[in-house]
Amino acid sequence: MGELADFTEEQKQYLQGYASGLIARRGSAGLAPLPGKPAAPQTLAGPESIHRAAQDRVVAEGKKLAAEEEAKRAKNPLDSWGELVARAERGEFPKGTDVFLTKYHGLFYVAPAQNAYMCRLRIPNGILDSRQLAGIAALADAFGGGYADVTTRANLQVREIKAENAPKVLTGLWDLGLTSRGSGADNIRNITGSPTAGIDKQELIDTRAYARDLHYHILNHREMYGLPRKFNIAFDGGGSVAVLEDTNDIAFTAVTAAFDGATGDGASGVWFRLGLGGITGHGDFARSTNVLVPPDQCTRVAAAVVRAFIEHGDRTDRRKARLKYVLDRLGLEAFLAETEKHLGGTLLRVPENAITARVQPLKHGHVGVHAQKQDGLFYVGLAIPVGRMSSDLMRGIADVAARFGSGTIRLTVWQNLLLSDIPKDRLDQALAAIAALGIGWSASSIRGGLIACTGNTGCKFSASNTKAHALAIAEHLEAKGVALDQPINIHLTGCHHSCAQHYVGDIGLLATKVEQGEEQVEGYSLFVGGGAGTEARLAREIWSSVPFAAVPPKIEAMLRAYLSGRAGPEQSFYAFCNAREADELKRLFAAAEA
Figure 1 (cartoon, rainbow, N blue to C red):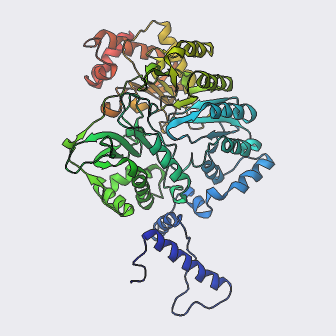
Figure 2 (cartoon, rainbow, N blue to C red):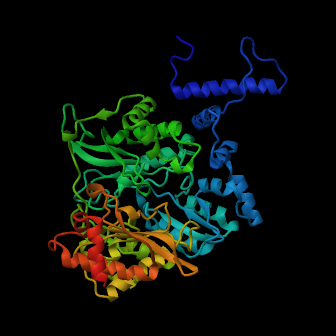
Figure 3 (cartoon, helix red, strand yellow):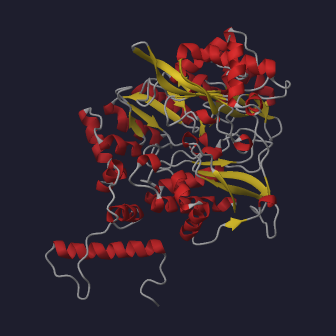
C-alpha cells in the first residue's frame, strides 16, 4: 500500500493538515522537529483547507488577494457569533470588512440607506408554512420595521433591525425552524425551485426534495462557504411557473431523454439537464450542456461544481470572480473535467437530439386561480405589490392558508406567493378572505409582472426608489387606460447588480442618475425584448438616462405602439420587439409618444 494511496483527496488534505499542525505545535513548544521531517508552517486543516490552498496559490504567484479574501483568510466568519453578540450588547453595527463578514449570518448593514440591518432568510424551494410566516411577522414587529419583502430568489427579507436586536432575530428564526446562515456574502444563496412543485399538472418532477437536500448539504459542509464570489442554484421541474433557472450559476432543468441505457430516476425517466454560469447582469445566461444528472445525484454534482469553482475562481478581482468568468477562461469542457475530478466519476453526456425540452411555462402562472393535479384542489397566486408585505398582511395570509388550505405558502421569483391545497368547495370563501386583506389574485397584465428590487430606501447601491417608481408606472398605465390582452413583465433594478433581472424583462429599467441643469435626478435606461427559458434573450437598450418623470409616458408609448403594430392579438410584446431592429423600435415608440 502506498503512503496515501487508499485515501480520497479530501482525506489526504485533512491528514496532511493534521500532521502539519502537530509539527507546528512541536516547534511552538520548543521541541525539535521529528526525525527525517523538516519543520513546516502550520497549515489549515479540515474542509476549509480547499479555500486556503486556493488563496495560497494566488499569493505564491505574487498576486494580491481582494480585501474580502484577506478578511476571510484572517478569521472564519462562521465562527464570529461571539463578536456579533458583543456588538449587539454595545448597540453597535459592524465596521470595515466586518460589514462583509457579518453577511455570513444573513445580516446586512445597509447604511447609508438605513442605519439598520436587513436580515435575509434561507427558505429552500421558497416553501414555508403558516406558523412560520406568522412567526416572521412577529419578529418584524418586535425587532424590525413591521414588514418583509419577497425577493427575486423566492425568499424573504426583514428590514430596519436595530443593532441590539440582531441576535434576537436570528435566534427567533431558529425557533421557527428557519435560518439565514450564508444568505449573503461569498456564499451559495437560497436554493430556488418550482413554486408549484408537487401540485402542478404540467411538471415533470417535484423539485422540493432536491432543493431541500442541497440546502442541508450546504448548511452542514463548511467548505460550501467562503467561495470566490456569491453563487446561485435553481431547480426547474418543468411546471407552469418559471423559476428563471438559466440566470443561475447552476441550473438544473427537468427534461426527458431517450438514449441507449436511459433509466432516468427509475420511475418517470426524467433527468435534470445541467446549465452553468448564468449571470444576466453580466450578459450571460447559463450555458446549456448535454450533461444529464439523475435527480438523486444533483447534490453530489452541485457540490463538485462548487469545489471546482473554489479552486479556479478569481480571488483578486471581485468584478471577475463569478463562475461565468471561470468558464470564459477555462472553457466549458475543461471546467466540466475539473468538476469530474471532484465528483470522482464521469458526468453523463448525451446527444442533443436525445433530449426533449420542457414545455414553456405560463408567463403569469404565478397569479390567479389554478387547478392542481390533485383532484378538487386549487392554488391561488396572490399579487403582492412590488413584493412588500406588512406584518398584518403576513398574519392575514398565514390565517387564510391555514383555514382554507394546507397551511402551505409558496414564494416565487416573481416577488409574490401562492396558497395551495384549497378544496373547490372552499375556494370562494378563500378568495373572499384574500380580498378582505386588500390584495388581489387576478392582477392586471401589468401588475402581475411588475418586479422591483429594494431601491435606494434600503440599498446603498441603488440609484433610485425602484419600488415607488414601479407602482407609479402601473398607476400611470392604468389611469391612461392601457389594456393588454397579453401578459407583460416590467423589471426595475436600481444598480448594475441587477437584482431585479432587468435584462430578462419584456421591459427592463436600469436606474441611473440623470443631469438636469445643475442637478442630478433619478432616472433609468430602458431596455426591451428580454426573456428567459425557451425565450432566453437579453433585452436591448432603447433609451438611456431618461428622467423618471418621462419614464411612464415612454412605457405607455411602447405599449401603444405594440398594440397598434403587432401582427395580431396572439403576438406577444417579446415577439413584437424581437422581430424588429432597435432603430425601427425607436422610431415606432417615438411616433407613439408624439
